Image 1 (cartoon, rainbow, N blue to C red):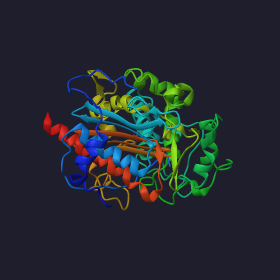
Image 2 (image 1 turned 60 degrees about the vertical axis):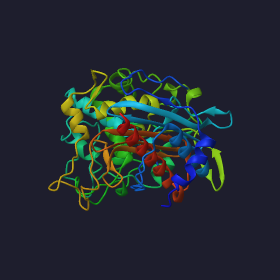
Image 3 (image 1 turned 90 degrees about the vertical axis):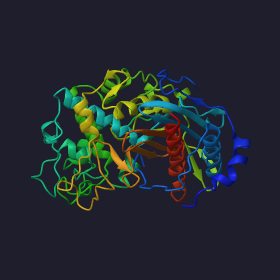
Length: 420
């Protein structure tokens, strides 16, 4: 990918785009109060390693790239040693009304939501409600069996590491699981029964891989929906309520939720799509398989959850998940003797709805959906974390700009770390 000649353009850009910034003291824990779900592209932009030394420089770089690409709004945070040290918004949450995008702007985070589902699974493990290695059919009110391997059990660990053999069928998934204009999605349990059980109206052999569970890694959103449904069945609580009790309330994530009905729409960003050279707003949607990508939150509030994960289940001295279970969630599940076929574990590994990204150089999760692109990634040492939201979809050929901006933010995080 062609990179911007930063050193030549930086002085001019700083003059043009220099603006105020919200930098937090690393010791200050006060939260800021200013105003395709679903996969990720394996890209690593190995540009020059010149560190960005000040906030005006990162502002100018991001604004230049945002304007050049046609991205309407961006929100971002940098986390150093489990503390938010910088956060900022750029552009607009609602361009038509002139509402700025800030770290408190609410947006759907697409597949980053799977990390919330993963956390809820581990909390249910802590409560003795589920086991990662039990046959999922011991939990479900209907039986899920791969017709190609009917005698092989499927486990939550396999579902959460995308090795279950359960598959998303396209275009059915995108055509049939998204709902617009306030229409309510189909009941999750009924949908899953119709999809996985022979005789169901959505059933097909194409809903399953021709591979034994554990043998092939194949990213599945619908299987993530199944994992969330198992949490609901075993705990007796809907995933949104379970998340509220064990994540949102303890972390004071008051503006976060799984459904639009739980969110203040006035604080929610519009999603946008770039069509040719024109950027247009698109409709908000909700999904049937919401555990795979339904969470709506802000950069500010997601930072608290990310820190909790990076800090082995603890935030500001409050423990949300037993340390050993938080470690299990983030632990690399693939080993040389126990890994899916064709996986190079030096470049690709997985936790419980948590994975390496960018050629194995980062850990966390990304998200992608209509009008949504999100990153929640850390270095392998969990020293530098970056969260970034984009409220605009771009053509596939232009998507590297998202990774380019993420990488600039990561380099800025490295510079802030050296200044400590």
